[in-house]
Amino acid sequence: QHTASLPHAMRGLAALVLLCAGEEGTCGASRGGIDCPAAPDSVPSAMAIPATMKSIVVNGHADLAQVTMELEDVATPQPKEGEVLIKLVAAPLNPSDYAAWQAGGKFRNQGKEGAGMVAASGGGPAADALLGKAVGIAAMQGCSYQQYATMPAASCYPLPEGLAPEDAASFWVNPYTAVGIVETVKEKRSPAFIHTAAASQLGQMLVKLCKEEGMGLVNVVRREEQAETLLQLGAEHIVVTDKEGWQDQLKALVKDLKITVAFDAIGGGNSAQLLGVLPAGSTCFVYGLLSGEDLHSVNVGDLIYSTKTIAGWLMPSWLFGAPERNATASAKVLPALKSGWACSTFVDAHPSKVHEELAKLATGGFTNKKLRVRWDRL
Image (cartoon, rainbow, N blue to C red):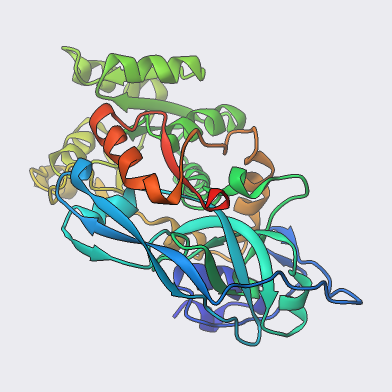
């Protein structure tokens, strides 16, 4: 429903969120803050495309260490008019990917984002202009756990010159979420905010981004070693919930920093607990469910008499909530992907060994690590 009222230059980005529903759009002056390439005078030759490709099939399990994967041969997709075929170089595993696998069952067409090279065009000026270009792609339905993917040309993110596709594998989910969180806090006119599960890749990005933005941030983590990771990044305020008296420490920081916003990735009773330490008129945004529990234990008095709010928050909904946000977010994210605040720390895996690396991380912990499938090594 978002695309109907959006100008053409924004429709491609909307298609990323709307499951890449095939809307071709047109190439406007800019797309997500990046200049669109002009149609070339002569179209570059397409790469040699195999008839079949490898695709990852996931066999889910409640215990991530027991998740298995296999490579299967499937037909290589063919781009339609206005579409391009991308040869994937790398794709990350995000928590939103493997959380679904814990329900069990068999999963195909996985991977919400990735980066690669445009190998073929289905025709049309916008598609032809991307031939041979490095691009980032994203689709909430899945697009990147396979060697090739088709995408409307207007849905691709041409990468900045000199940025290798593997360095842009995680260009979308975490970086755009980080920008969205900071901008939402600004819109709420809070000088600082609380963030839980703060040792995650997203949390580390927020530490660095908030320093650049001059935004106050209170990082809530479970363990002391996670706090050490954030301290090395320059985090100023850290609350460790394994320590006695952490609630009093958090309350004091809320008062001192005049905090009226919290972003909670845990859910369950944690969201209600955060709401309890915030002053009247505050908002706790819930954007994750790491606890696996529905929201509970909310003090109704906080909602009625203290006019506090608990609200869900989803990056795509924020991104399309105002027309200028796409360009604003892209301008901040893309230049910072290689070595700035938006870069990620990866553990690389051959496509045939992804489940083995996932098992190691599930056992040893995901802090400061993100698994990256390297399709260029197949």
